[in-house]
Image 1: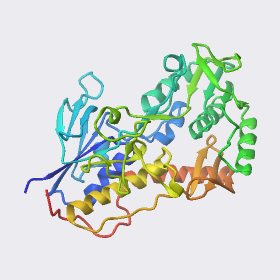
Image 2 (image 1 turned 180 degrees about the vertical axis):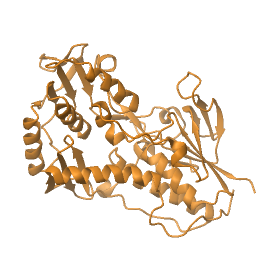
Image 3 (image 1 turned 180 degrees about the horizontal axis):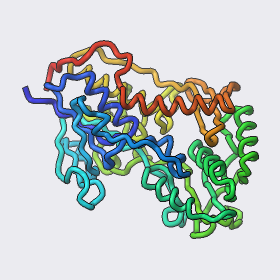
Image 4 (image 1 turned 60 degrees about the vertical axis):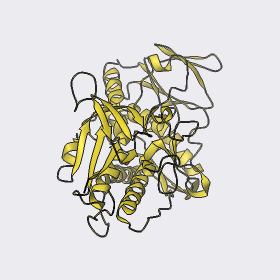
Length: 393
């Protein structure tokens, strides 16, 4: 019997999690699982603010993570997806001969997990002059720039979401000799509870961070950022953290996507327009509790990967179709190495009064980060059963 070809694009939390779970759920004699990623390592995206500030993170080679699982790791960059012909076009990882070579990779089932990158939102000068930590190369570039700054030099972090908060506090704690400014379009910690907001103010004040609330950046220069009221803020380094934009490839295909380029899927993460394609992670537009779209995060991506993998396995083996209710429990934000904020939320991600702060919260956040990486390496922990034989190729 011909092997059913499953191709997973992207080895972030969602893609790597899906590949590992599929390998556990399906018999390797029946399926061939190929995981495609541009970089040879699994990158802990939730720790890139640490990497940027000089912390050394352990490397996690994908081939080591998937050794013995039957998952074939292919280091290559995806340049196109033909969802009608069921083919993926690849090129080498970075154009210098590295990677596993270019070519066309056919599939029977595709798991699209190419994720997202930073979003400059079309602000003049942001793409040319600002740094980002949405990728490992971006974090390493920022690391070098911060290390080269002399004492007293100004650093401006634009964006008051989780990434901006983590980056600003990490920089200020690691380099207290720098003048760090956090520019927030709304109020500081507006999405948190009163207790959470008060804690943010205490921590940013203690770290010497200047917070400019209700401020919009309209331009980024080589040595400054300009706000909507015409104020020029000096910036030897500008870090842009205003949100994420999905990988553009999906929008260039015949897949049905939203206006932001996220793939429209059903409750099993199956593409609405192409039943042989599944989308997980930031690339998928998934409805959560209360009808609200799931936010881009590993907290969303890992449960998506499990649901998609289990649905694929069920359809191939004739098993029972799984159903996962996507809901949130908390939002975790690091505030340097010794502080954190764990904001408890409703199922649809709205803040409640309860929040955990201080060193206990920092230890909790560290466990969350370690747990997310562990889940990628152990995607079947606690699952009943073993490999199942497919009923159709």
